[in-house]
Image 1 (cartoon, rainbow, N blue to C red):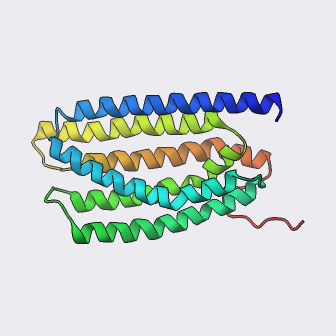
Image 2: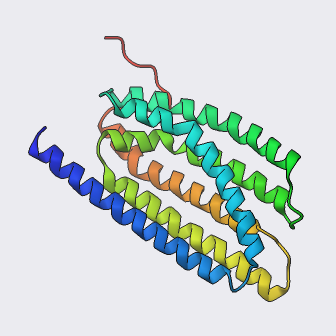
Image 3: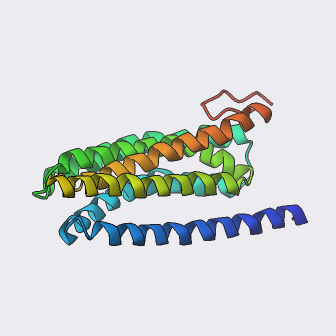
Length: 216
């Protein structure tokens, strides 16, 4: 392994560690703010919705991420494989969302709408998977850090603002602020990844869309 590869990996690990620490800190601050405007019961329900989203994302993409990282592939091959995660995500978000709404709907305002937004947000986030795996394949850790940082900050703002507004207006919107935050996270993540990877894809002759591989 070359010195440049080791250096890039070390820098990448540093970026990702700082990203995780920063994300946890922002989440903690967010929860402290929301506790002033929302009840602990709503935070508990929001955690259940978060679990639904995490389950969809984990079972859709983690095995594919592991598979493509274990051996070198052409970038386009990895991008094409990542679309399997999107297909799995559509199936899982629909089936798990249906099961959730059928067997245990809390008596909370806007819960059904929030569940739907979480499901759509999960699928939108999976649309960024082709750009994510391309960035990973090329060890572009700064791209991942910038995308996830921007998305996390946007999520915090997009969650807090509706909660504060509803509280001051005396509106009961339940866990809808969390769903708005999650959707904002997914959209910003997708847009930043596309903005950062699309120029690189033209330069390095690959596409983050499905593309037929050239015959060897």
